[in-house]
Length: 171
Image 1: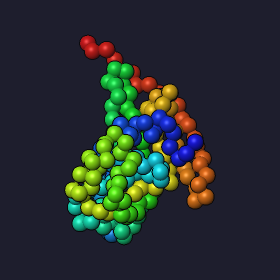
Image 2: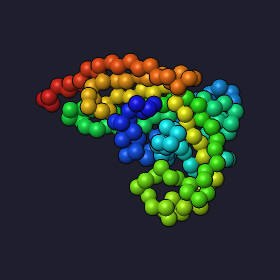
Image 3: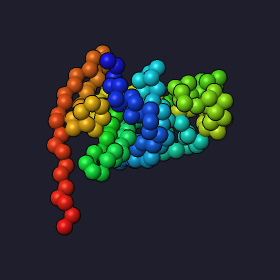
Image 4: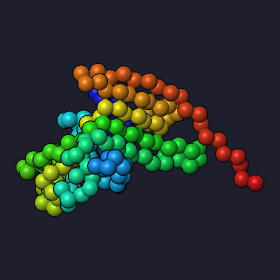
């Protein structure tokens, strides 16, 4: 197994909107919604944008690469089932490949990827996980997984059962 489980990868590949938290130079949190893609080559989250180099998130990452990234949704209201993945780690600024700027966006044609690339900055944010927390994903949606990635790449995992949320019938 790599850093992410098959269920987490499938979830990330179906979602397009997440929340990126960075740390400002004064130590305050800064959270923004961002479009993203899971990059299987680097087991990373890649974020692009039109004005990325002028954004506060970009500037925060240049100063302090510590980030948290969350993707979540509600899969069902009855029974209630929320799904989420939180990735804590470090982000770096990298340059995209101009010939194939988003090679891991498999659902897009090369022409579409190149069109997008012409409309976004050449720099992108790449998030590398040091901690992954997920819930509501996989064969047991009532389970939470917590994994820590050491500097040598080794992974330790803990799983916790979740209690189902019961709602009283409407009166």
